[in-house]
Image (cartoon, rainbow, N blue to C red; front, top):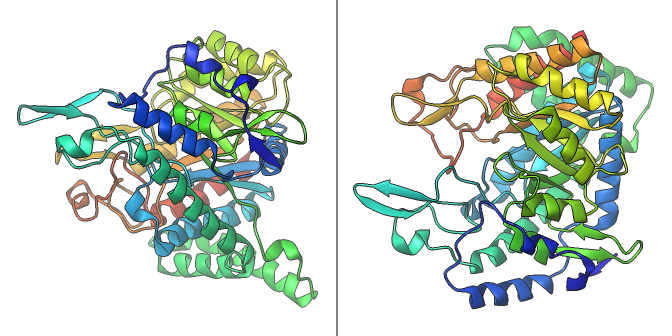
Length: 449
């Protein structure tokens, strides 16, 4: 059970430090009122569930499991529909089934879901036709429309984020425990994908293996409960610290602090300053923590992050999510992995092949090449194979919808196609077909380890 946090319990120590990427709220009193209200709201997740995920992530860190983390670049309030949530979950379940079978390894399934409503920006303002307004920072802060009214940060949106996250989690829990996630059903979806995919022949052998294994289990009369439901956890970037600290509670079992806005939270590349507020906040909570590491990360940075966030060297506590770019991963990652491994720390290493591979197409759309995404994952696996360490997972921006935001893939999308269904508010996402292409290809890589 979790109870409301005592402000003196350490949850607000971050307020004494510089906090990057925070909104410039125009009305401090209105913000205080919203924070007070959020502090009275029930938890979205429970401390025991966070502990369970930390145990699962310990298996990833020890090389006994693989993390599949994926979902929207930025969730939107107008996308909290049953169909959109179901499609996203369906895609992740399909990817998980492929990876579980091909790697003969448990797959820990974590969504970028039910809280990913805030986005860091490279510039605080945006200018169009001589008009300068605050940048869009996600639906939790302001609106996407380029008007002064929409772009003014509104703390009432933090309450909308809570309620949207609550509705999403309710549906995800129902889907994952109510029969929708039954492994036989998920496998049938994959059979349909293979049958209709241009890459289908490549995947047909693997799908056939899964089919024979399922038939064998059925013939033996095996019907384990594990086939009928799935463990699924929520995660998001802990960006807006007023929201995260308002949803931080004292666990009545242990007296420790948990951020009950999600099971796992991560610190982004733009907010991981060692002397900054985000690292201080993350150091105080008991959740599993992720940190994004870009190509400029030094081994000293990584080791200091371990000292701050995982002083007890607890497997499952800390995940390093590397986002190097396909052209840099083979050069920059080995030294980091070597130095961290030599220190004795047992972190989970996860590849984010999305954020280092973004470019602007001639049409003006921000996009990514599927081949670059795939190449960064290949480089990630090559580095770990060379060092004898465990490639712990992938962290992917994806959607279950048939968008046209990233170029390439089996159902190939060309630059000239981007305008057809370019629906993201921030970064380009893999669509369902590209996500499943990636899962089959990653499964092949994992087998080769």
